[in-house]
Image 1 (cartoon, rainbow, N blue to C red):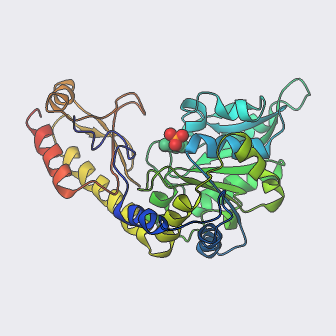
Image 2 (tube, rainbow, N blue to C red):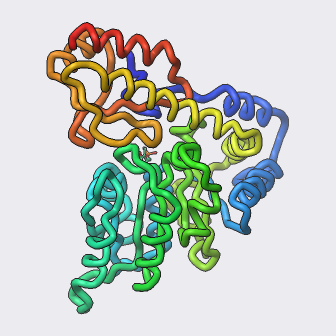
Length: 340
Ligand SMILES: *Cc1c(COP(=O)(O)O)cnc(C)c1O
C-alpha cells in the first residue's frame, strides 16, 4: 500500500528530529522535564514567539487540545468551534471528558474557517442559566480543509470572542504549514492577534510523538502541569521530546519541511486540476489537497495501491508531508491520468 498521501502522519520521523534524539541519547539526565535540554527548548519557544510564553509538551494533539480547552473552561461552560473542527469530529469526546462536561457548540464554517456571524449568534442567542455559557472559541490553523487564516481574520475572531468574555484556543496541529504559507510572524498569528493558547503540532511536521501547548496567557496556564500528569501526558524521558523541538525551531528546519509540503500540495493540485473530470474543491493554502475525482479514477488509483481518504471534506483528501517527493506527486498524477 502506498500511504504517501493518506495523511501527513503516515510519514516517518524527519532526519533532523531523529538525529536530535540520538544526540540526546547519551548519559544520564534529570527526568520529567527537569533537564537542561527541556529548559533550552522552552527558551527557544519564547524566542520563536517573541514573548514570555509558558510551554508544555504532550504526546499528541487530542491531549493537547483537550487539556488546553479544559484549562479555559469550567464544566458548565461551552466551547465554540467549527462544524468541521478536529475537536468535534475526531477526538472521541476527549475535550468534553477532560473538561468534565464543557459542551462543544458547532458554528458554521466557510472553506473550513469559522463564520464570525454564526459565532456571534452562538455566543448571544442564549444567556440564561439553563444553557452552558460560552467561554472559549477554538479555531484550527491551518484548517481541516487546508485553508489558512490570515492575521486579520484571527484578530477579528479574537476581538469578537474577547468582547463577550471568551478565551481563544488555536488547534495548530498544522501551525507550521499555516506559518510557511504567509509572511506573517509566529507572533502575528497568535498572541498579537489575541490567541490565549496554541496547540503547536510537531508530529505532522515530522517529529516523533509530540505537540507543544503554548500559553500566551499566564493565568490560564496555572496548574497545567498537574493536568498533564493526571492525564498520563507527562513524559519521564522528556529530553527526547525537547531535543527535537530545540532542533526544529532553531534551525529553520520547520520552515524547510512545512514549505516543502505546502509546495508539493500546490504541485499536486495543479496537476490533478488539469485532468478531465477532476475538480479541486478548496484553495490549497497549506499541505492539503481536496479533490472531487471520477469514481473510475479513484478506484484505479486504489488498485495501483494508493491510499487516501474520501470521508473528510466532501472529496478525496491528499496530504503532503516533509517526506513527500516530487516523484511521488508525478507518479500519482500519471496514475490518475491513466483513468482520466
Ligand atoms: C491530526 C490533528 C490533530 C491531532 O490529532 P492526534 O491524532 O490526537 O495527534 C489535531 N487537530 C487537527 C486539525 C488534526 O488534523
